[in-house]
Image (tube, rainbow, N blue to C red):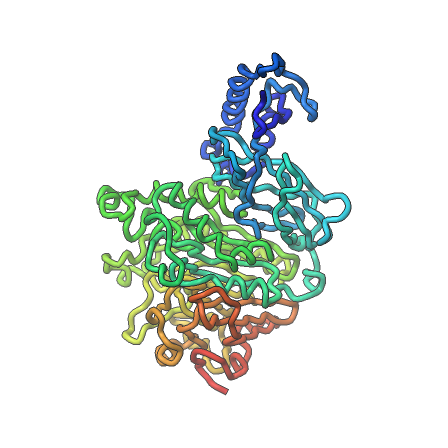
Length: 620
């Protein structure tokens, strides 16, 4: 007799047979122009059909009844149908899921559906079928705006990523996943939204209300609980969550004493990366943030460097360069390219992000036009044609940082970036918000040294960016940065012969503002566990020694929000009081305003002349 754990689904023609696999974007290639990196869904279908026919060959019961091929209640021919698992599924990361890369007419929805129940299938190739529905109301009443079914299996770590289509611009929606074979098994309801169409007047974006971005970077599991995500989800009005790097870390570390022991080993294989993403996505605050608002990120291996390995550049990392030596001294035993492809595959499965077009390399840079209010431009300043960076053992970076041919972004991305900035001005967008990984402003250490792994290691490239902003008279540019595990707020000003154009007291001569955020949990650049008072001593040296740096803070872990309307941009920095246990105990450490009148500088007095942590250049 047919096992009670499986049921047939009608899939007659080959194209139709693969439809439910194809609907799940986790099976597809991470890159639109490299289909060879996708899973062969025709092969998966044939594999399942073969299993069905093998099992149907012995379906005669003890009572003499022979279970012949017959049309199912779906109307299909059972002989060409695979089994699907119907012994129960567990939405393991529900909260559960997430959604991301919102367009004005669609959004990606994500979940993970793992076989559950007293008797699990012995054949791991049996697919799980998941349904989704998306509604325009919180009660999920009436007809869904979009719905459908999709298969998942062990091939993609039982992840499901579908695109909900036919949505209206700048509109809120609610969605839910369920078990195709038992609609009573459902995930929690998630909320999502689309962004405004490019031509939406600025004063009508987000229904006329200010639009708030929550900005994060550097969340290392073993260093503490991801409370910053929870504070943003529960205690702010964040509309979109932006992550600038180090969503996961490749290392192990020591977190057992606070219940944060990292599983596995240093990441190298796809199984390693899947396990690490799985563990990170169990953090309750991260779960809450993934269902509160859409996420806009860059690829796992491009978000910064730790998602593959430390100090990444276009041909390697600090411990796994594409050389024979690199393979031998890497703690994981893997070369860079191997680790990179494994990381891309796993991140594509686990994150609600769209495919991108990598005509010549693994391109992830892209632009979101959110009405006439802003362009949100996401850059890759880690991997795409990035010339060699500080790998700790090489000592020549400072001597070559001013080389004109040296590039942080590569020629293609750099030209695209300049064109995007100019096009944003021409189309009449008020704000140009640039999300990227590393600190842009020049930061001289007290010893006179510079951070060679940041833009300070690519000074000629930074000068070209500033020259383009000045030369094209592009106003209202805000650069968002992560990576440094400390907070920095600066006017964007020349670092060369045009330095005299900038007045640090009034801000005159600046061409924009940089908001750089600290880590969600990763240890302070000023020293692990450094107390606020000790960190403030270091911050005062920084603001005194760097002309355009207006605020520095290095003790607290946290994030910041950026709220935009037609007249001003307001950045509010949040500090977590304790990350050794899960809580929402935080305070606003500083607030900064940039006026949308072409001021191109922080409003004076900076931060209203007073902050609750860190050091201001000018108090009062």
